[in-house]
Amino acid sequence: MVDVLGIGFGPSNLALAIALAEDAGNPDGPRAVFLERQPAFGWHRGMLIEDARMQVSFLKDLATLRNPWSRYSFLSYLHDRGRMSEFINTQNFFPTRLEFHDYLEWAAAGVAERVRYGTEVRGVRPVGTGAAARWEVHAATPDGEARYLARDVVVGTGLAPHLPPGVDLDDRVWHNCDLVHRVRALAGTRPRRFVVVGAGQSAAESVDYLHRSFPSAEVCSVFARYGFSPADDSPFANRIFDPRGVDDYFDAPQPTKDRLMADHRNTNYSVVDPELIRSLHDRHYAERVEGRERLRFRNVSAVTALHRGDDGVRVVVRSDLDGQETALAADAVVFATGYRSGDPARFFGSGPRWRRDALGRLAISRDYRLLDEDALPDAPRRVFVHGATEHTHGIGSSLLSNVAVRAGEIARALVEGHRAQAARDLDELVTVPEGPARNGRAR
Image 1 (tube, one colour):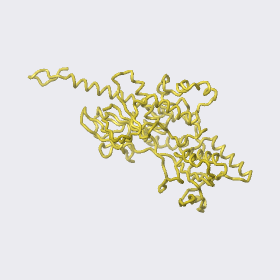
Image 2 (cartoon, rainbow, N blue to C red):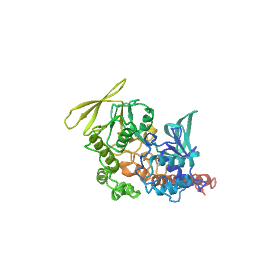
Image 3 (cartoon, rainbow, N blue to C red):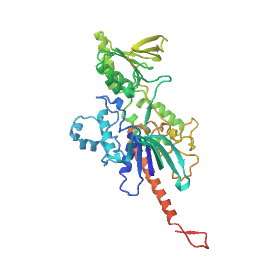
Image 4 (cartoon, rainbow, N blue to C red):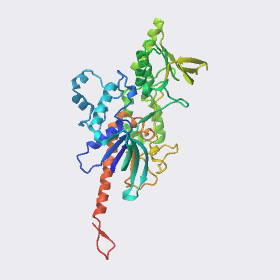
């Protein structure tokens, strides 16, 4: 039996574990455990390209925006690793992805006693009523099955790779989430051609990485746009990722929410870092000057068919300008087609009746709580979510930019709910009958 059970242990629930740990000065605080299906902590390992940098400042780490004095900040990590001065000398707000992943592993080690790795949640169902209401969580472990009873559940399973309809992955058709692992497996071979599908940052990074990793291979980039679009990371536009931006979006009327989402998609969706765009363009131009064009772009185009063979994949690419189709023989195809949030309600079967809007999207409170149609206002059984909140909380709500603040808000709701329930439990415990002749109760 625990007070809080977290499903998944990526950066979001890691930040929550840290926030709860920093409230541990209260001996009566909620007991939390987190279940993670991976055997150890890992975050987008397949895109840990050696020189790829984060696109958010190191100050937007797991804790600093919530608690600048936290021992789990990125600066505390640098001090512990003995690299504070060297990092300052880089004069860069954006660490490499490899270094940030090392920071996340370092932070996860600090709260490891709260995590059960190698444990996959299979289902959650409500049990009990009134003050005894709980969530019963069933999970598979390396040793068999486990069952937990929890008052609150926090779903933080991250994003799932997205693929176009009909595309199945195998040794020659990849999603970019596995890029680094797949490239390592090809070490020592001489691939002839790769095809990369997509127009965002991951697609551009995949094109760049494959082009550099295989000096004799052609890399063909296929996307629907006319060219890669630059990400808007200007100071005013970036305000939409500030914690206040979440408040503004949540309180706005629906037409304003729709307009904000449309106006600022170019801060995060299907856009590329301008320096990477320039690098790819200059490399492409230099190859054309040399007469040896390995980097090729098929814009305003789409992949319409994949035909697998013993020696590779035949990729059919259609131009949307003139409808002409071209078949490309490729050793591998990389779909850098993004990620999608899973429906957090999928863990709960048909038990609770979650409130949804007219489009079928989950209704979510400001403190990231799912709303149960049948729950009482002070119900002891609640569900909180990281992610799947863009329609209610805005673009920045589910991103790393707000992870520390979001975790703090959820932690505060968990702690306050735990204290209120503890007070009610104590109230029930000390309630005694006044006497056989009276119906009232004395405290």
